[in-house]
Each structure stands twice: as structure tokens, then as C-alpha cells.
Image (cartoon, rainbow, N blue to C red):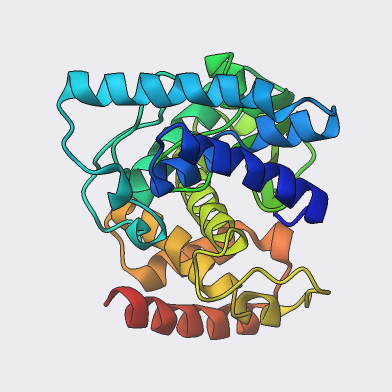
Length: 297
């Protein structure tokens, strides 16, 4: 997210002014993350920090009003990077808007929300969709108080010549705050193929959300932008393994299947994408199953 010293000064200046307005440190951090795109745009357009502050000041008051109305007693200083979990906590909240100060949400509940939104636009047919903006209108990012702000861009295509039901690939781009997905569907395989697609969307979103956390510095391991291996070693990289098993865990919980079966089925379903021989798949299934059990038991 480092965009140079001038932008950092611009961002820090806004943060200092928010503190002068009475926002506590964690509220300042939250507002800066929540409005990162807005602030970045203002910086590039040479907009004055005062104009940005007017918008953020309104959000402070709206957040406090909402918290008072809902009788939420949690101190604003009580959330931050330490609140990030592995998806095992209870579902505690949903997506926030400008007029809501969302309660802490587990990574599982975030994943469910994004997958539901993705299915809504996928069913519209081929096209490029930007979430949550496509469905909400005035929201450019998914906002949760215990997660970095992020958005999702999905390109949906149709191709009856592909061998499988669909092909999907995803990555994080633009400093890690955008999840970019490309989905190629064989329309003759739907709606039956939605059973597997829902599982793979859950895996993909949770996988990429882990990379978002890495890119924002809330994990011990960071995403690596250097040249990547294109064989089985790709799936053994230090930053990929946590994302892979986090994604697989979503399918384990959805389908009530063993980690080994989920991992093997995923590699078999996506052979056209990774193009690995069976012996490499066997090796990776054993390796990732072991890593899964180390993490989740």
C-alpha cells in the first residue's frame, strides 16, 4: 500500500486532523482504511484534505449515533489487527455502509456475503462486475471493522468448448485491496454445475481474503510478487499454503467432508487450470492435508 512519501504525508495529515476532532486512535485507523480509495483519489486529483475531512467527520458522528442507538458498548479502541481470526469465531455481523459501524465479523461470514453477491451477478450472464458497487450503488468497498477494506472485480465469460463445467482463476491486485476473478462457464452445464461452483467460490474468496490480510500486513507471512513456479511447487509456497488451507476449510465445513477428500476433489476439478500429473496431485494432497491438520486439527 506504500504509494510514496507525499501520499503518506497526505494520509497522515488527515489522520492527525481526525484525532483533533476527537476520534480515538482505532477509529482513525478504521476511517483511513474504510476511505482509502476516496483518499487516494483525492490525492491524485489534488483535492484539499479539508474536503476529505468533511466527509470523514460526518462518518464519525454517524458511527457514534448508530452505536448509541444500537446500545453497542464496545470501546472503539477494542478492535484492530489482533481481532483477525481464522474463521472459527461465531458469525457476529455483516457488511457495513457509510451509515453503519459494523460489529466484528468472522472471515467465514465475510466469505458468505461476498459469495452470495458473486452468485447474484454471475446469474446475470457474461460481463464485468464490480462489487459491492454493482449491488449497493454507492459502496466501493466491503467494509468491516476488523478487516481491511477490499473490493471484488469479476469477469464472467461463456465458452461451450471448455472441457469442464467452468474454469476460474483469481488473484489480488492494486496493492492487495482488490480481489480479481475470471470465470469462464460452459452454459450447457448450468444450473447443475452451481453445486461445485458454490464450493469453489467459497474456496476462492476465502483464499484471496487471506492474501488481502497478508498484503495489508496482518499475517506473519507476506504475499510474494516475485516470479512464481508453475509446477507443484507453486502450491507449497509459504504465502500460498495458509491461503489454500483456509479456502479448503470453507468447503470442508460446507460439505462436511474430510480435508483429504476436499483437497483431492479440488485438484481433480481444476485439472484444466493447473495441468498437474496425477503423481503430483497425490503428493500435494498428502502435503496440504498434513498442513491443514497442523493448523485446524
